[in-house]
Amino acid sequence: MEIRNNKIDLDALWQKSLVRVTDEFKLPPIILQVDDAIVGTLGNFSASTGKAKAKKTFNVSAIVASALINGQVLEYRASLPEGKRKILYFDTEQSSFHCKKVLQRILKLAGLPLDRQPENLIFSHLRKIANPAFRCEIIRKAIYSIEGVRLVIIDGIRDLMLDINNATQATTLIGDLMQWTSEREIHIQTVLHLNKGDDNSRGHIGTELNNKAETILQITKDPADEDRSIVSASFIRSKPFKKFAFRICDEPDNINIPKLDTDYQPEVSLRRNSFDYTELSESGHRQSLELAFENNENGFGYSEMIEVLRNSYAKIVGVTYGIGKAKKLLIFLKNKRMIVQDNNKQYVFNPKFHY
Image (cartoon, rainbow, N blue to C red; front, side, top):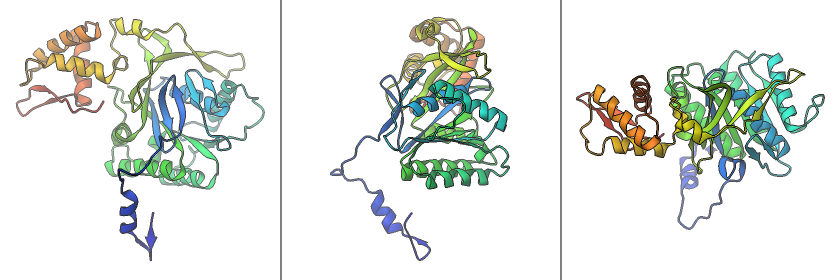
């Protein structure tokens, strides 16, 4: 930030903010992909979300392992620039014992020896530091003082703030992520829990992440097979990738690792009569809702809305939801502000929603 005589130089900041049609910009360097879909670029941040026990940390371990070898692990393919391949991993939730388990899992996935710390991976355990502001400052100091860093993991971003529902704290923290990634040309992958009652990210920090992140990965348990975790993109600026799944492989050394489930077929899962919000893309929801409201812009009452949703989603998705599941669907759509209630308490379509 431009500072002169202890004052912010707004003129200098203004000039730096200008974008001209004659300017030339390159696509930020891509460091993480799934197939041809771009998951992570330098100068941006992303998030892995999921409910408790969905195996979010196992998923992140695979991302880090792919970055360590600059290759593919599960469906993640990493390509960090030569000579600038350091990875910082900050865990805010687990004990030192379990942090070591995560570290061992990463090394095992990468095919590296378990008795030697790799040069390019620095693992920090922040649980014992009680003050969220101190945790945040430690992360900032490491990012700005260690050269060659290109990927940063923050497993437990919620623990960098006192109140997850404080809008000011959330905006400030997201502003930090935007500043750090831009100034240091790094990519930050964060981890955040989803609400128990729906598939929304927790608190104001979750809302801000959804609005500003490059990619939001969602890890969910397969409702038909609890031993299977499904990875999808609930939001991605790139073109979407095909969902994939993994299972945890029990190893004799007790260092269990995720392995790709090659039997998983997303299209088959979609045809099951089960309710999984991650099975449908933004365009799928939009088509279903446009069909639902095509002959009624004035909206519906509650009972009528349930039936209309059942019919429209059956035609677009190919699944006929029961009344109970359709009620959950309506709650989900309201939380995502795809459907809103007007002054007459009628349910109406909000075509400007951001999924």
